[in-house]
Length: 322
Length: 188
Image (cartoon, rainbow over all chains, first blue to last red; front, side, top):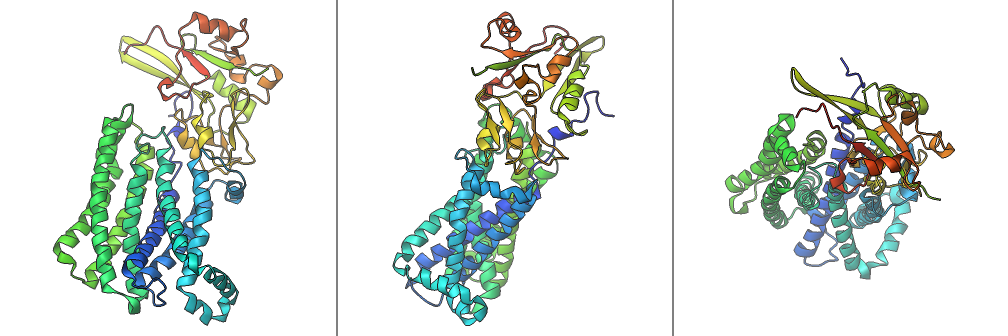
């Protein structure tokens, strides 16, 4: 029976659903994988103009554009009016994080595509199908002396894309679980973690011939550090909510103890996403001995954990309002 | 001259008849399953010491509207009079504003597929010097509406006579809808 004032469904509807969670994940994955590729390029390559790229750089340069294009496609499809998305490109509002995100993506997306073309320059030239791209590559190569600056620029753009998804949610004070200044840094760290995992995974699957086990060890050490940063960040995130006024403490309490999403947090985000990788490091990869089987499984587990963190934050935020 | 609108809802005069709810639906062609305004009834206490109170749920027309600052296309905008409107043409229905609103006043119109909310009946009534539909229909005069800049207006007089409560004032949104809180009947 509905009350005399009618249906109240609209007050508890989930307005941002799985599509947004997946977009946040893919945007983070894209930014993370390009950041990791650049870190390998800067720290592990002896000569910056090496023509035989490390598998980690190849993986990052492929994953970053593909993930961001897929993510943006899902994002636009999920709009109530997908065909009206062009308004995002012609009207801007500087106080809206979504609008700033559009600007970041307009800068970031073309650069990652160019980066991919440069890394796969030889493959591109091999096929006549890609002939039109050749002139683009040559054009870009003429800027070769600015390569380092463009890479730094790409790095900063990736940091912006990786963190704006956090600001997007934290800007809303109507939703206590989202309105935390720690959300952007939490999303950025976890996207770095997913970047390491996806690059190792794609590198091992598709670019085996150029794998450098030293680079993989370097990344596994990096990932352990990132996960060890992420755990205290999650702790601080909830402690911050408990100390905040208003509805935040109640919302945080419910999000940690009630229903399906509390289970996802403890089992999925903490257990699978952060606990298992740490356990793998302690048990199987002690002193980072390189074992392919464990590394592949570990990467998939990390990616799953990052995806679940996005799902958890999106849904728990809208459900547990205090 | 620019107006300084205010809508005052007197919880003591409301009888929960939902005439405002129905008048709004008719005036603005609101589809069946969604609402621009509802009046909820809360019953508290234990028999025989029961008490009731009413709560109006609708857009409160913030002076500092969070729905406007988050809108990426400026489809959600504030007019010179401080009223918050939606430009349906530029609304991409990203629902960011729905999430940003602490009053849960916004929803997606399932027929037009754009975001919608109470607009004080601005285009159809208020701009023609008429009262919003909910105010004009209210049988107990629990609702009053007008310009605070006009000293003789009902809202100006009521604002000076009564203690007004602004919903979720601590958020700093500065609503233009005020409540005269329930003085009797409520058993906490």
